[in-house]
Amino acid sequence: MEILGIDIGGSGIKAAPVNLSTGELTEERFRIPTPQPSKPSEVAEVVKQLVDHFNWKGAVGCGFPTIISRGKAMAHGNLDEKWSRVQVDELFSKKTGLPFTVINDADAAGLAEMKYGVGKGKQGLVVMITIGTGLGSGVFFNGILLPNFELGRLFYKNGKLIEKYAADSVRKKEDLSFSQWGKRFNNFLNHVNMICAPDYFILGGGVSKKLHKFESEIDVDIPVLLAKFQNRAGIIGAAAAANGFL
Image (tube, rainbow, N blue to C red):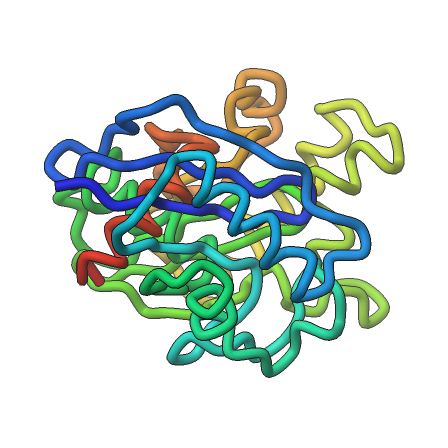
């Protein structure tokens, strides 16, 4: 069985059909830059373009970059502020004529790793961190998703959100070396460890492919695992969510 997975991010919107038995993409991932401004109507149009690209006719799963409650965006995350309180699943369904399941993007990435990847079979508290425009997080206890843990939205220094200090977008914006930025990211991991003492961290997102460039700065005293699917995880987990794997 296949379901189309869509991963909406601050810089790009990606999609591919997913084999739900294996978690593998069955066609090459297709990406369209996130429109600027990223208003609901503009993003919905890109979602339709992705659906049309694959000539998709069935169910669709979508990871979205903010807190999602029953398909509704409870905030706007790193997208346009007009997204707050939008019923995202209904918007995309109306635009495409297809049934949509929408969950938080980091929850989707974590779901992929817990079902098919390095988190499979891991018990206890597992925290998936997606490193990108922001710092997303998916939290699982004994394999069960605890939705909408936005750990990147924790306050850090001087009332500043910690993702504004330690996300990969900050590394690029401030032209930090991986060593400099890695120290900041390590502070984030230790901050989360102090709050909830997870049994495992799983690191995903695009920059996770470059773990070797900053892993020497990581000293958190629990296992840190590299995501199997990296920046494909959001697509895979979104498709799994649309099939009820929550």
